[in-house]
Image 1: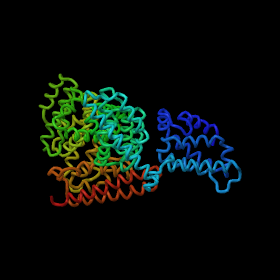
Image 2: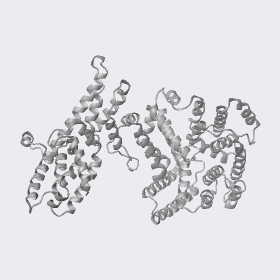
Image 3: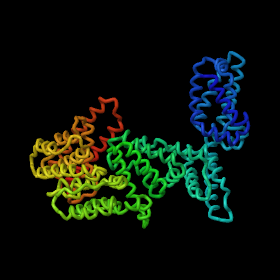
Length: 618
């Protein structure tokens, strides 16, 4: 332990207040802001003290240690922080000895015992407490409860005064109350007071009343890294309304919240299922806050947009964007009569016709209706880009058949809206495979999705996808399809350097695996063509994603059209085999996280149960 470092902390403690006297308000503020740093230093100090054999040796190495510890013993902020106070008591105990060999050790032991009594029992004059039989811990608990209750009443009174013009509170009242609560923000018991302060701060912002920046920063620290906890619980739990207020008042906390969410979903837990991801996102009420506060919505979407652009359209980020938008739309639909207002505040006016089309979920719609709806989506995409393009679109749609139409140049904003509604992407791929004549609208929709700014490449893309979809459709009724037929259909049309073609063809192959009569018999070969590697984890994740899209959700005649006993049994066996290989791969790899394996196992168990339920009569 460096003597100079201790002296630096001593100088800081001196600035907080006089020894044994009242600590100044500024001193309390400074103490609260550095409690974490102080606790870390005290732990290091205690380790150093225990390495020296005698208290005399401690004081020879650190002659100012008594002054430093003594000042901390009279600092209310230090005593109110349980962890820091415990380490302080350990440091005082290190100065005590049963057999003092020098006078300095005898005096040090007496002083340390006196400080310990002060820290543990509080100041003298507790005759009432002693007469009633309270333990120190009981007294502290009761005092804390009374302080929280008093602060809560003050905040309620402040809210009432705001509504009475004759009794307006001073603008600094809320600021002072929030600073008074600084030592309490890390205590779960004080969450109700913290929530009231946040809500009062949001309401008083328009009138010039502001919460202390130190208070907002302290509350923000209690909400950090929540997504890394599997239970998704903060140190101080807050209601959705309080979280919304915090994110509105403290933008850096909102930014950290979004980044933590992205890091968890894309890096720490990349194999999470769609439903589990939705549960995780909604557990923190961020979609709700986006509906309630346009500021929160704009900041969140701007961060996700920037990350998507920097990652060049990362599939994991696209999935997160879809799930987040779906959660947002579900919250919007809960509003009564305010849906148009929220959508107007979220999307550009020019894009609203496209949003109103995409917001309709295809579940329960028949094939002709879905085809017509996709046609309207593509038409709207073209008119958003240029109203003059409507004539060209009319000529193409009236031509009939599966004639390849012209490409559509899609603006960046309209493409961002398009990719957020993933349910129409899945529907377009399914219609391509199951329709006798692949619909032109599906081809054009997928071309806009994957090649938004390259209309000159879209015709080649659509021609390739048309040939593959037609070939796969012809193979659907075969009881024993051959893998080389699939391989020929794919390799004869696909350009090896086209990620867009690979993505759609992979989706078509996985849908073929489920919807064909005998495709499940060559499941391994299909996965080889889609994944292109022997990685069991990736193969399992791709298979689970496809099954989730076709199993999770309400049962309809169309969604159950592919179900049969042999197919379900074979797919469950494939999942179990890949699950076993995945477990072996995780056990042999040091880079794999246990949480990733738990996510995969959980998804496997859920889907196997759901698929078995499909065979039961409804």
